[in-house]
Image (cartoon, rainbow, N blue to C red):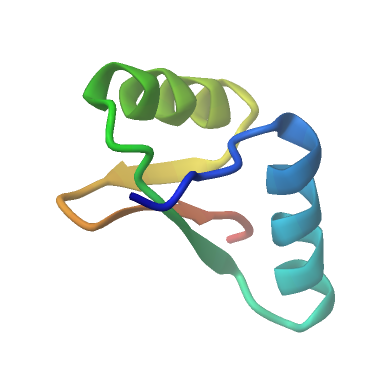
Length: 64
């Protein structure tokens, strides 16, 4: 099983790269632990992002 980096630094870098590349969303791989995935989703939502958790990934979007 692939290990997913859910560190704040990594996620911020992924979002920044996408933003600078003109995108308004990113998808993050699930961790394999539903409790961790839900906590990450809540944290991103609290940070002001629009977040959707589905069976394959976590979608994070921003902007209007």
